[in-house]
Image (tube, rainbow, N blue to C red; front, side):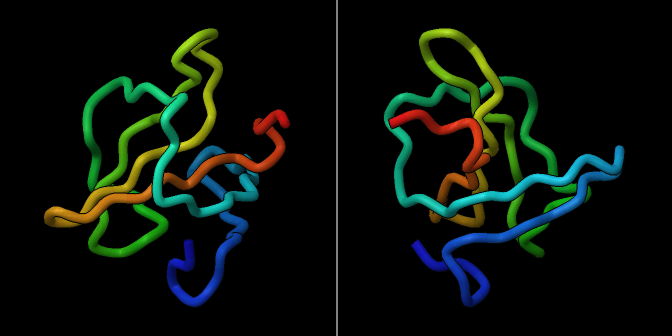
Length: 81
């Protein structure tokens, strides 16, 4: 899906780690862990929560939520075909 004008985005987190994300309407293999955060969101107005693989628990990216809307920002290098 397109967010902020693009399907893919590259961001740097506060620790200096670069993440190249793809935006997806759904990610049925993901589970969400930890608390929902609002600080340091790469998409202003959207809160985020860590998304992990539901099977192996590998960090896959984040779920972003705003009101009743949501999307997944998944680390493209973490996806396997």
